[in-house]
Length: 132
Image (cartoon, rainbow, N blue to C red; front, top):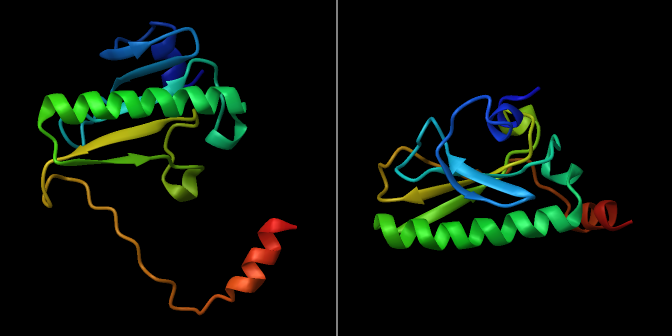
């Protein structure tokens, strides 16, 4: 059983900020920034793409609502919403979840960076590949 399932089953304590029959949200024990929150389905799905659409929709709505509350109440200047899919992308717990990461300044402990691929990609070829 994964650590998130243990939290959902109340085998491990957590600081819950939201809960209904399908979705739970709690503060990440390793706060990247103050208010760093995880939003996940109560039923175990390894990744977001494994979740039924209705569960994903509910997770997104809860994530939006909590993000507004967190930024309003903590004085955050912005936020990142993050989902990692599989280990190669940084997923360390195989239970679908979103991270809400409030942002307070440029040196607040979170630094997402996008680097342009140095190899030129044929966009028409990629479009054809993913839309077949």
